[in-house]
Length: 324
Image (cartoon, rainbow, N blue to C red; front, side, top):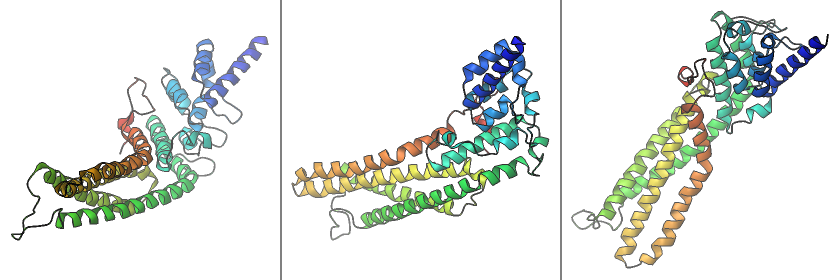
């Protein structure tokens, strides 16, 4: 009887450890009681189910790497007839959504969970209906509908602001290309054509114009996307990464072109003392933009191109199978 009480206590600790993401407890109990791998809670949720429902990737990775238990656990269903793919389609608790910042990253993380579990189950599990007559994807879309709508508004607002910015930058760069610093001589040639300073101005101004046009086209493609749930996994993050990077390049190139133009003008008029404060203020704008946008950009690059939070049984990274 004492042994039975101790076993139930450890099984409860095992389930709670999986729910709360405490991998050490899960490992220790499985070493002492290997049969605990099959224990479930009142709703017939196994530890693997709970790891998926609470988005505990460390516990999830550990359990699926245990020899001989993966298939057995993946076939389990709860009282509502939900298999593990149905459960991953549910919304996790808000604290788990706050692990990543930025609206699009939350939806991307949810899709990464769904696609990873989908690779582990059989094809039949993707079309199996629960007691509510819903397939796993139907559960996912229903539970994440509000998140998709909210993030669509966020992306459209961001794309609108960036489009306006690139339009202004492109207009400035095009005007500077026509009305070059120093003006033209009677033959129509630029007076300040000779010298490295003018070359820097011309190249940076051209880069600013082309990158601004590229940014405009990228964000224009965001307006025309269908905003399906699957687009938040790779398509939309990829476009935002390219768009924000291109916008940063256009802003930086515009500042360089502006500084070069001031240098060409003021040096000719022996007013070089005006240049340092103007240049400092100009590049201060670039620093502000980088400070505000780089955290989001780096997070998107990390979750889209970086190492996956999931690992296969052989320990290799499974990011390759997530993109499509």
